[in-house]
Amino acid sequence: MNYYYTTDGTEVSGPCSFDDLHTLFASGTIPHSTQICAEGTESWKPITSVFVGSAQPSKKAQTARRHGIFYYVFWGTASLFGTLAILFFGFIFLTAAGAGFVRGLSHHTPNTENTTTTTAATTQNLPALTEAEVQQAKSLLDSLRSKRDDIEGITWYSPKVGDGYKTAVYLYLGQDQTGQPWLRWKIRYYGDGWLFIRRYRIKIDDAEATTLLPTKPIKQDMGSSGSVWETFDEPADKHAQLLNQMMAGNTAHLRMEGTEGRKDIELDAGQLQQMRDVLLAYRYLGGTWPAN
Image 1 (cartoon, helix red, strand yellow):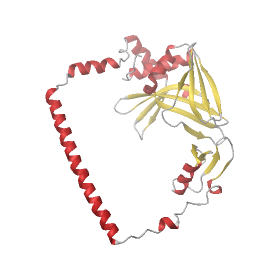
Image 2: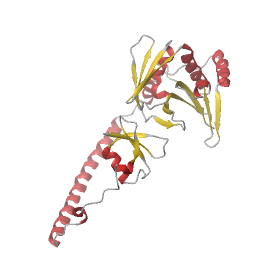
Image 3: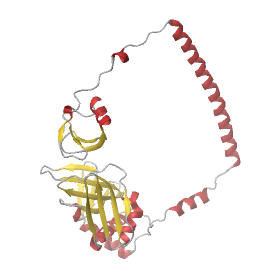
Image 4: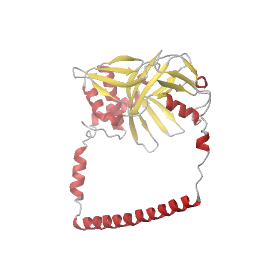
């Protein structure tokens, strides 16, 4: 059976197996105040009700076997000769490999011009903004909600849908003190109960649904009123192809699938246009975006 656990009552981690949970507890990685919940249930209980304490080593493990002096001399000598043999053959191998590498360099001069051309051809970004797009982007940037992080020196820009307590899908961007912008994609679930989301299914217009798998753990939060958040928040360029398909469509249906349920939402033409607007503002600040 798998378990979820929380060390502070707000952030939930897991699921993990019984053995993994025991290892975390026995090693002191999670404290005695940790609360656990078996997967498929909603009952939380102290971890100490399952594990009384860390496992102690057996007496057999504590008692070292004693051998005579001949035993240690024999194996010590064998280990010494074995090490010398490994070093000898390793030296021969490295010498031969180095000689081959030098011969390869002497017979081959890389064509830097062709290499650069090939690399550039693999990634084609959107062209520079037109004058009309620049003026539109300035207006859009002013309409976004901005928040300054003086500690990190970052200014965050997000659409209105980024605020409030509701399920939402949107792009947002940040800009550091050097002026370098970056774009992120957020899918936020908000509800009364956990879904424990594992993947997303996205259907764009009449095309078949596409599966989106997170590349890092989904952040989980719990409010004081018992409401919960499960948030996918990743760099947008990791999913550029899928985002381009979404922003080229008229509507998109998104399903959040978890071990404890699912949630369906629809992104209409206005919401998709909002994502296009944030992308335009990102490009105005100097960001690049693939064309396909």
